[in-house]
Image (spheres, rainbow, N blue to C red):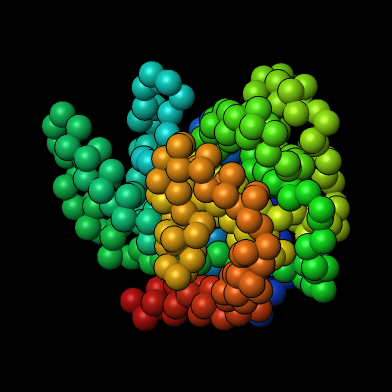
Length: 365
């Protein structure tokens, strides 16, 4: 098939996902993308922009695929596209956390709601996200003062599925053994409030005060002009830092993941854990909160070692790992082998089949 994939936020895991899908799919996928910035404006206006750019092209495709950062209903209405469509939810505005006392912007919620109603199939990257989306959607409907679209929830759920993301591990082949004299801690997440960098660095400051030996690798995208918590950490932990900042190439990224011993997440928003899965494939031990998608993505046999309950448990378990790293060396290969199931070469057939189903079900009608 010929597939048009419209991605209005082409960066981070959105970019990695789309690049891998295009690379490994048996279908012919043409991409239409915008840079990953100004996310609120992308949700508000990207459909208007793409309607001007690709309206004449869309009739030539068998399937339209978009992600949650665009209004699919507007895109189809403004382009006149009447073919089958698939919506992939990396995240959604019903469940995304807000900063401080910031109130919900119901325009963004409605955008995701209407897009999910419009698509022939909605794909969610974890059961955790789908379940929470379902719960929050019912709650949102109850907030509408009158003339409630009561059938909306059930219509969306009937055509929603969980499909785990694929990862392109080709740059992590032949990862060397971990031979650091001092354990290396990795941060490879976005520099954003929902990843809670303040909790991460506060834990490291306490360990540094205890003279616990560790080195630090800070990666990830930054869209802030002055990332206060990171700049403070750069100053306070300067002698422990091996690398600080975004790297431009996949080879450099793989190098630092291969060099790392422990990857830590302190996130309050994570629906798949793309960065953590990549790190585990590079045989880096994870330390993750017992919430969000992590208990689902990480096999239950690893939970007792690598999931923590609260900030104190994070401190205690990270201290324990740093001081007893060799005790867990035998689990590196097991983690690597477990997350290998997310390799695109193993995941792509399910995506290709779902795309086939979206088209064939429309033709059957």
